[in-house]
Structure formats: structure tokens, C-alpha cells
Image: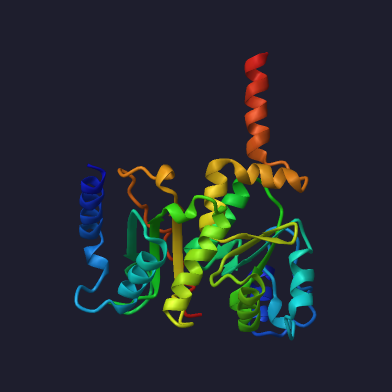
Length: 129
Length: 157
């Protein structure tokens, strides 16, 4: 039941964010997703490309938001969870870290399958300066 | 043109940057462009100049990033006085603070010289009430707490 709910949520979320991602080529999004899946074995994972909210060319992969729900966070403080996610992404992208990576790192206990990720705050034009 | 505007323009041109202090207290932008290098020691000093120190894009009156703006708004809600440093004024500061904290993004928040996190963490600390506790540890009473106490007192009367 849980798995089913999680699958529908992921689908709904994917539909919601369809406008933001380029379906054919999104190598960075795919790399982030693969790295977090491999390393954290998440029960739920969302990788959202929020670049469209910013002053970057269409189809850019610069600003991301991730929701990771994993048992691996159970004994980690908030900052350690974030450091772990950052380092996994950093390693995968071989030093070319994305411009923005907003993180929600929850344990399965802290996660409500009905939870919907809120978009990041609006850009205020600082990118690239 | 107001004096503030003129000053800001001069700062942008780097004319008075050398003579300005590195930072000002409470909700004012840094002019870090005046400094030459940021090694571990100078950064350690910098994050200890006030109980709360932040590194952001733009300044508290005009944040140039949604995440930096969120940090400013949260600290404002709690009535916290802090030093703000604008990393857009100095590429060197922008790079070196990331290495200093081993944290890849801006904004960055320091309490009592210790790195606390970026926007996501501050927001979650704010929502969970942990921020009030962390501020209390360094002797800052959040105005949100004061307001809550006042309401309780009124009820008790």
C-alpha cells in the first residue's frame, strides 16, 4: 500500500514539474538521482529541477531541490544529513557542483507520504553576478 | 540622490571600500571587497565578530537571492542582530567561505562562530523551535518568545 502511494506521489510530482525539466536530456538531474539512489537507498526520492525559476537559459540544470527519505538519516543530525547529501552530489558531479541545491532530508518516520514539496523561494536576480 | 545611494555607488566602484570597516552591526552590508585575502584565521575572526554572522548575496535591505532573503526574513522575525557579509562583493570571500565551512552554497549562517547551515536548515530550525533554543544558548532572546510570553501573561491576568 505504502509503495503504491509513494509511486503515485512520485508520478504526480513528476507531472507537476514536467514544465521545468527537459525530458530528452537532463544529465545532471539524472546523475543526482542515480547518486542519491545508490548511496542512500531512499524509500522516497524527488529531484526537482527549479532552474526555470531563475534567470538562466531554458533547459538549464543549475538549481535543484531534492527530497530524500532514507533510513540512513536515522542517527544523523540535520546538518550531517545535509553534508552527506551535498558530498554525494559533489562527488558524482566531480567538482562541478550545481549552483543551488535545496535539501529536505527526512527519515521514514518523519515522512508523510501525502507531503508535497514546496517550491524554493523566488529568485531575486543574484545568479551569475 | 540620497547620501546612502551615493555611498552605495561609491562602494560599488571600490572608491571608499578601502576605508570602510569590514562590516557594520545589524542589517548592513559588508564591503568585503576592501580586504585582500581570506585565510582560515581571518575568516575565523570574521565569524566571531558577532553572535550571529551570515554570508549572503546582496545585503539585508536588498537580498539578491531568494534563499538569502529567506534567511534575512527569519532572523528579522526573531529580532536578531547580526553581521551580514555580501559575497557578491568579493569572489575571494565567496570561494573561501565555502572552503572554510566545507559547504557548497550561499547563504551560510554562523552562531557563536560555529557554522549552523544554510537556508534549508535555518528554516527547519525556525519551524521546529530549535532556533529559539540555539539563540538562547548564546544569550539572545528571540522576540517571538517574548511575544509568546507576553500573550501568556495577559491570559494569566
